[in-house]
Amino acid sequence: HELATGFALIAASTDQQSAYELGGLGHGLLSYYLLQGLAGQAEKETSQLVTVKSLQEYVLNELKKKSVAVGFQQAPMGRADGNLGDMILVDWRGGARPKLADSPADTADAGSVRDRQTGAQTQKPTSLATQLKIERLQAQKQYKLEQYKREEAQLAGAVGEAEVVIEQRLDRLLQEIERLEQEIEEALHG
Image 1 (spheres, rainbow, N blue to C red):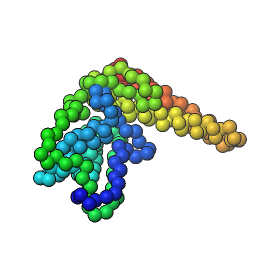
Image 2: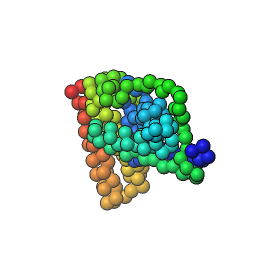
Image 3: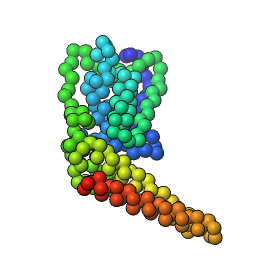
Image 4: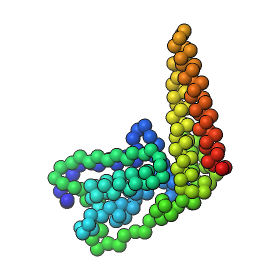
């Protein structure tokens, strides 16, 4: 372990997805599980060491389980490159582990949802599932808005049938954006 070198990457989601935050934690799920792992949850069985491999396995497994449990699309990814073995991140031999925030399941009614684009706080949802649903809907809305801007830019140079097709796509995108806004409102107040 002591001779290992290299680098590691753990991503909360793919570049086509949103990474979700939970109210009450003050950061995203990836950060939560990284901190828990470093605090000892990702410790190798009897060695009392947190290594790149053990942290990566712990974080990715916990993120996947939470994603399935609450029903949102977030596929965490990890990669490590190096030589001579697994790198030690934390050595807990003889040391006391810190106490961190409660688990995401325990913070279901804490905090509020933050719009990742505007930073604005929204009304406090009543459950973790509601918080995550709102964040998922907001991410979908933002994606549709970006699609709309791209289509609108293409419309400027389009003529004839291409112009009609782009206008139809713009109309569908507007309808989807309005539907998502309505679903967000219903989740916030319903």
